Image: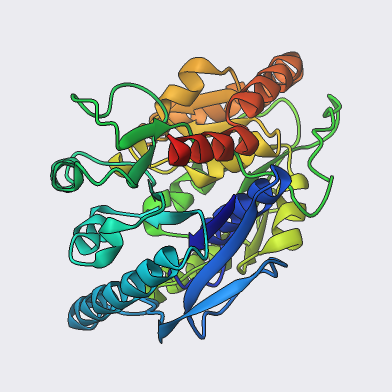
Length: 380
């Protein structure tokens, strides 16, 4: 099948780029012909080696925007999306592709879709929604009901487990998240950590205050480890207040030998090498939304075969099913401290368990399986 991927989100890197790459490469490996449709002037962060089609109207970035400016840009993006959808409808009518995937959608995409001819597409359209929180659920459900009867419009909701919708819709499916694999290197193979060697934990990704980094560093210094333990901290910042806060933390804690800091965005091979260079990943993020939207870092850890230490807010269904690490209440400092100590001090005896369970989780959340399910859903 010739499968179009419509991407309009402008980002300097991160999981959005990796997710597009996952779709492109897995579709190609399964014998399909992916084609990227993007706004004019789209800033690619990766070379895909597939056909690119440009739509009239530049993309809109929220980077650095706040308040009224962000609200205005949201209206501009919505207006542009209308025109992009109209152009995609003409491409569908001309049979430029056999199906289309929109990688990152929300109820707003579906609401906008109803105003365009694209809702009557002659080829299947699969809108991927990356999780639904309780506030979004009624809005999404409303759009699903409004689109009922459009047999070519399909909605795939990424969801880790449990019942999401009380009623079944033929146009909607829930699908397990895919892992992020080391696509540029084979450096991710988990190497056994020797008992007398330092255990290296990694704290990676976009830095935000809600990730409780400073509290983690303070607890780390109080821990009684029975072996050397190091913590590598990498953070990319978008908002000025996050940048200033991260720089402050680096200045304050850089003197501690157990810590190493990198205030920089990592992409592609450099990102993969950084993940591969640690023994386990730690994610002390405390926010309710992590229960509903799949954790990119958690599924990076599974793809790279790294055990995890993570807040119980992050996709709790995953560690309920797979023994790939330990969880804690990020708002309970004493529990976090005890979990850090237990994880490090029992790591040698648990290594083989973590290894086998990570393999099992990797098979269940394999990106090849994810893409195959998307294609089958499109054909259904």
